[in-house]
Length: 114
Image 1 (cartoon, rainbow, N blue to C red):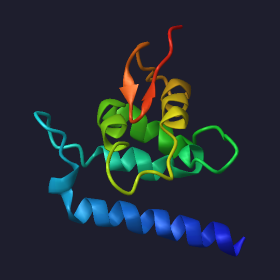
Image 2 (image 1 turned 90 degrees about the horizontal axis):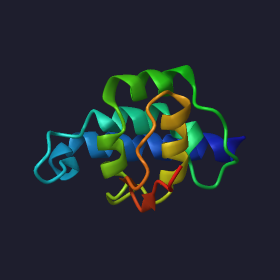
Image 3 (image 1 turned 60 degrees about the horizontal axis):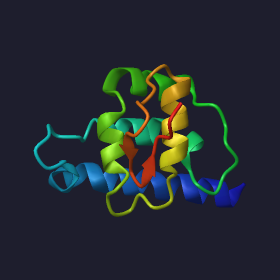
């Protein structure tokens, strides 16, 4: 239980540092993707690599519905996101009604053909 709290605190700190240095999180040629961090934070329980898959929370789905999936997927390539699973992020998007098209890249993951 203590390990889980430490991991959650570490994840939250990573996200907060990213927000504070928002210029690092801009995708070249795109609008600022800082809002995409909300999805990563709201969905943290569903998208951590080393945990069993769990359905996204209502908070996660609200963030996905509000922001969409483009920016969170782009952010998955940034430094400090290697403990998150792009495949689980895509799965959360599907469960929340924002599926990505086949062939779309989400971090290092490519959505397979249907």
